[in-house]
Amino acid sequence: MIAKGSRILLKLSGEALGRGQGLCPDLLESICQQLVQLADYQWVIVPGGGNFFRGAHQEWCPRVVADQIGMLATAMNGLALQAALKRQGGRSSVLSCGPCQGVGEPYSAQKAWRALDQREVVICVGGTGSGFVTTDTATVVRACELECSSVLKASSVDGVYDQDPFKNPEAVFYPQIRYSEVLEKKLEVMDQVAFALAEENNKDLYVFSILQENALVRFFEGSLKHTKISLQ
Image (cartoon, rainbow, N blue to C red):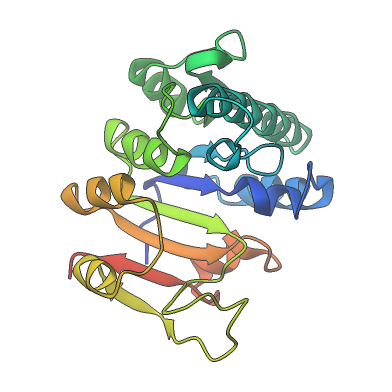
């Protein structure tokens, strides 16, 4: 499916990492064990922060401030990933943007390339560093900057459906779908800016649930339920 040695962008949903709230240590350890097992690939990770705070859903403060708080939440997840990776014998660098300066090192594509050349996992926190932009958009921006061949969107949903599968058990699952079809059917996969950027830069996008047992390893074995989104 994806050639060994490929550089991959893994978007880790904050809600999935916390299974509702905070961090789930067992899931964190499992993900990092799998990343070490899959060391034949080059990994860039963009964690969300929704397990701690969702900036776009707050009414008590200005949106830009809420987004900055959300960026700090991604840094907490990034530091937790780095610590868990270290326990598993993995090496990583945390690179940060925006209000997360001082956590790890300031992000630059050049620093990320050097870390990847040294076979480190690169963990990008702080989103893009700007408000009004989601971590989905940050995911695709980093995938383009760092020349990642594919984007893996790992959340609590096991693929793309025509409706919310948690609300409607009769929702239709799409194992493979084109970008144009997603737009035509108005399916919710990523925010529109992120999705348009992924389509423009011809990034294969895979959507699956990280909550499934051994999800990353099974994805590369070809035995995990998922949706592939591509131009063709």
